[in-house]
Amino acid sequence: MNGRAAGVRGLALLAAGYRIPLQPGRLLQRVALIAILLMALPTAHAQTGLGASGESLLSRYADVLLLRDYNTRVVVTGVSLLGAACGVVGTFTLLRKRALLADALSHAMLPGIGIAFLVMAGMGGSGKWLPGLLAGAASSGVVSVLVILGIVRSTRIREDAALGIVLSVFFGFGAAVLGVVQRSGSGSAAGLNAFIYGKTAAMLWSDAVLIGVTAVLVTAVCVAMFRDFQMLCFDSGYARTLGRPTALLDVLLMGLVVTVTVVGLQAVGLILVIALLVIPAAAARFWSERLPVIVTAAAAIGATSGFIGAAVSAVHPRLPAGALIVLVGGAMFGISMLLGPARGVLRAAVRHWGLARRVARQHLLRAVHELHEQGSAVPSTPRSAGGSGGAPLAALRRLRSWGAGQPGRALHAAQREGLLELQREPRGVLVRLTPAGRAAAERIVRNHRLWELYLISHADIAPSHVDRDADMVEHVLDPGMIAELEARLTAEGAAPPAESGALPPSPHPLPATGGPR
Image 1: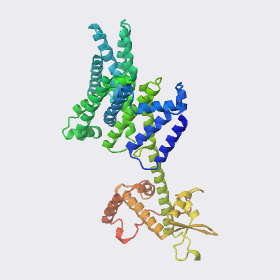
Image 2: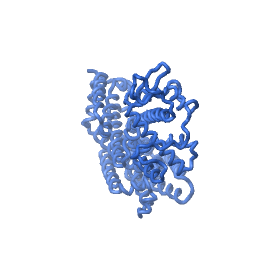
Image 3: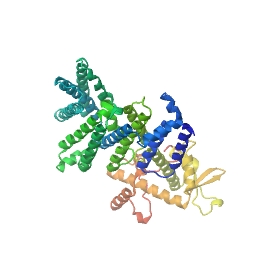
Image 4: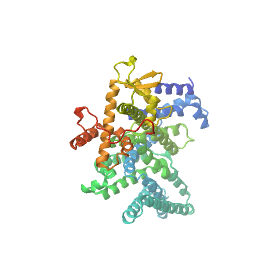
């Protein structure tokens, strides 16, 4: 079996498995497998310019996934843990509306790296001692955070403007410092570019251990301060009334951002580390409305992005790992945006489509009921003896200002649900309510008129204008709100009790069927 056939067969098996409802974690795993299978197709292989056969390429992917190679184990472990930690911290910064703070931090660390190199080189060293460079980057990042918070708290400059100022000034200063470093004549200065663009493939086991320990510590701090961070992100004013030190919490959160940014320098570089702090958290927002689930999903997306990006780069050495990690994260964000069960585009479209169908059906039933109230319904024919008569379809269209094609879908949907019956007479099509349809129409008319009466008595809306205002709200009233409306209006004597079965009278004349609605 060649590589294309194996990839297609794997995709088919995964597609068949989607008939079973998936949890977010399983869906992420399946997305990861799909991405790997797609990358294993010969087309993608041809674009990299490699000449291995499909079978050898799949075997190399198997070696990477099973972590048989030592260097692969180091890189994949390091970037996966980094992605998970960035996902956890990035969720709180995103909810705090400070997602771009990581961007400012990553650029603001550049002058610290250059200054640390010059200081260590001036002391007789090579200038490339990693702990010293990371300490310089962290110091520069902390200074930038303090400057941003100081500008926001002591001036009337908005936070986005403060971020832009600090980002541009610090990065310009860092570029100038690196220019001085390059002209210093030190041959060891060339490796500093790795901090800008990242050098994932050169990650050592000590780097992976540092990232792992940092990820565990950062996650532990976030878990311990979860409730405080939750209040800080959603309602900082309420947190202050409870005596929470919101300023210190802000500094702690920014310190966590600095920490994961510093340890991410070796993995993806200063420029791309922002993606690991923003993309997983933004993608996780589409999966749930509950913060614990969002944090968990962000960590899973960040870890999966790092795993797949590093794995593909290990098989295709010409593709840089840092860029692939970001691209995989962007692909997972796109999938989450489309398929997310909480805020996904498809879910929103389905909800909107369902609401539009429900609104159209309610309009149709209410229009038929109002025609009966006006006495415009045609009496039943012998074929429908015992019925309540039918409303002419032409009169319904005039009542609601419907075009020639309306209310086609709503009419057929209500007919399938047993709410309406169509009678074709020589004088035209008649729409007749079934017993179930009559009960539904009375409930819809009652809710509409309750809301009309409430708007007239409590919002001072004129009866001649209340119909359209009520029509914009009545379709989203929940049972609790309807019960509250009934209780209040019944107590005021504006509406009959619900137990009586009587409908409130219309507070305005019903529109005539000869004119537009």
